Image 1 (tube, rainbow, N blue to C red):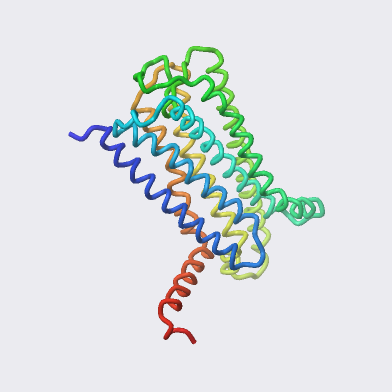
Image 2 (cartoon, rainbow, N blue to C red; image 1 turned 180 degrees about the vertical axis):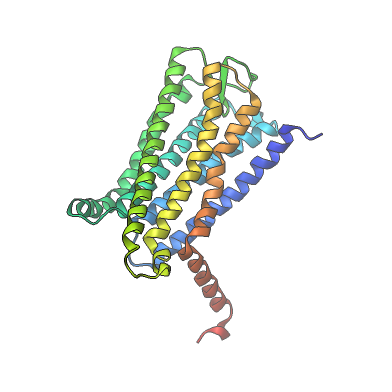
Length: 313
C-alpha cells in the first residue's frame, strides 16, 4: 500500500514543475507585451511581480519539502535551514501582498469617473513600483523572528511542543512565539480582509452597471469583450482562488497553534494547499486573458516567418 509520504513526493514534484514552468511562460508573454507595446500598463507590472513571487514561493516552499521527503536534509546545514525557512515565510507574505495590490488597483481602475476618483486614478499608476517595493520591505522585516527564534529541526521529530516551519521549528509554549503567530494571523487577515472589501466593491460596481445598461440598447457582445470587465472577472477569480486555498491551509495551522498538537499529515496538507494558488494562477490568467493567447499566436507566427523565409511577403 502506498504511504502518504510517497503520495506527497509525487504531488510536490508535480506542483513545482508545473507551477514554475507556467509562471515562467506567462512572465515571458507579459514581458513580450511590454516590449511590443508603446504604453506600459501598470496592471501588467503587478501581474509580473505576482508571477515572479509565485516562482520563488514554489521554489523555497516546494524544494525543501522534496528534500524532506527524499531524506536529503544532510545537504542543508543549520544556517541554510534558517535562511530557507525565513525566505519561505517572506515569499508567502509577498504572494498575499501582490494579490491584494492587484485587487486594489483594479478596484480603483473600474471606479466611477468622478472628479475625486479621476485624480486618484491618475496618481495610482505612478506608485505601482513603490508599492511593490514596500511589500518586499514589510515582509522582509515581518518574518525576521523566524531566523532569530527558530531552532534547527534536522535533529528533532514532530512533537506537540514544536511547530516546524520548513527546516526550522518554533517552540509553541513561549509567549514570544505565540505573539508572533497571532500577529501573523492578524497581518494576513488584514490583507485578506482588504481583498474581500475590494472584491465586494468590484462586484457591486458590476451589479450597478448591469442595472444601468438594462435600459440601454447595447449588444451583450460589447460588454463581454470589454477589457475592464474581462480583467476584473479574472482578478475576482484569482482573488477567490487565493482566499479559498489559503483559508483552508491556515485552518490547519491555527488548529495546531492553539491545540499545541503538531501532526505531520496536517503540516504536509497545509503546505500543499498553500502551493496550489501559485501553481494554478498562471493557468487562470492564460485561460481568461485573451490578449495573452493572441500574443502567443503572434509569437508563434514570428517564429514561423523567421524559420521559413519563403513565408515572408
